[in-house]
Image (cartoon, rainbow, N blue to C red):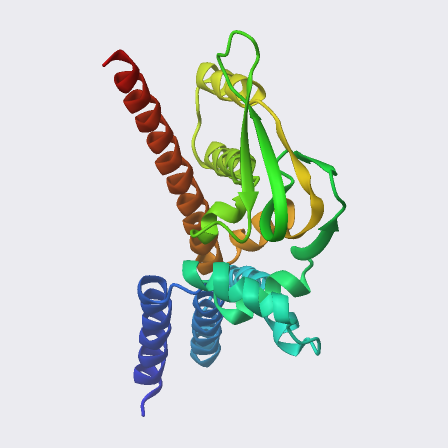
Length: 283
């Protein structure tokens, strides 16, 4: 095959690898691996071309390869560490995955990645123990009972709303999640911070956003008299993993959305019950 045709073929192959991977592959690790392979093919084609490539072009392509490799390592390392981990899933690990994470599209390897990176861990709370819900963790109640206390905004007497969560009486698994509202606010702040890096926002809107986040009322929960077994997710590590795994990010966002839908449905149901009660009293 003539040299010019070989170079042209390599360039076409690298372009196809980069373009197709960007359009069709949703998994971040595989996408970034395809980008690395495409960059390697481009460098190989330039090497075959020899003296026809300027030092500036070589430096640019090498820098792009280094960036692609770095991004691939960020995505692949947690998955590789989880795959090589010798620890097996416990009974409650498997049950938690089957009940909660599989339903939102999380793969078993991604679940192992969360465990291996200590993003997920099990904790046993003592009876009547108080836990602050400040967005640092999001919790899944495995066994026991907790009472979640949320200050009611706009209440003249500073009242609170108390929601009891019991693992055995909740037909919807997402109803056993708590701390999700605070996590959603942290996630929103993370997305907003990224947006500020790419787009210039005016100072007024930024101040309004900061003020609204400061006004967010804190909440807490009280563990029941028999204690509680809880699977908690560490928010900073989770957000870092989500940055380098699009599928994980979509699964966690889907989980938060299910929790919000559940809370909204319960709120509408409570409002409907109160309205019907008032109507019966008037009649």
